[in-house]
Length: 70
Image 1 (cartoon, helix red, strand yellow):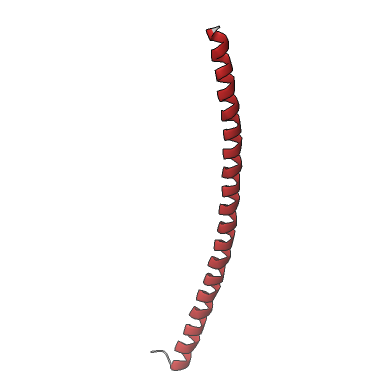
Image 2 (cartoon, rainbow, N blue to C red):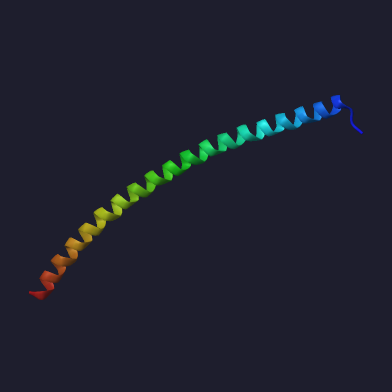
C-alpha cells in the first residue's frame, strides 16, 4: 500500500503529464487550423481559376459552333 506522500507524488506526476499532453494538443490544433485555412485559400483560388477557364472555354465553344454552322 502506498503512503499518502507517494500517492500525492504520483498524482502530481500524472497531472504534469496531462498538462503537457493538453499543451501539445492545443499546439496541434493551432497548426491544424492554420493548415485548414491554407487549404481553404487553395480551394478558393483554384475555384476562381476553374471558373475563369470554364467561362473562356464556354465562349470558345460558342464561337466554334457559330463557325461550324456557317
